[in-house]
Image (cartoon, rainbow, N blue to C red; front, side, top):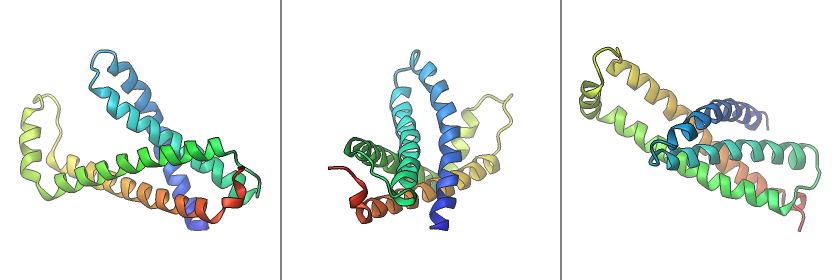
Length: 154
């Protein structure tokens, strides 16, 4: 369980950062509705982090009951977070394995911004690790949900 707690800490830190980004994204969505989908995914990840921590604290550690409604919130947001993670992993792998497309993208960025391919690749490696850890956390949480059915009110 210590590994799950470490994973939970990493997911919580990531969700905290994502919550701030989501707030700015919602403001951007007023001018560009295409941003709404990403905001929805990020909000789902943040809610997943909240309900996963709540489930772990109440049911696994505290041996208390969690309502079925909260379990449903956890499961729905876990699905959204799973989609977010898969999209992140696939995107990062695409960037890492095909730096030529990344080079074309960097050429389109204004020259005042000094972003190198190495910077983008480092960010991609970091996001790949975070999204992979989030995937592991989601699967582990589902297994814990299965094993602790008694902790969910009917």
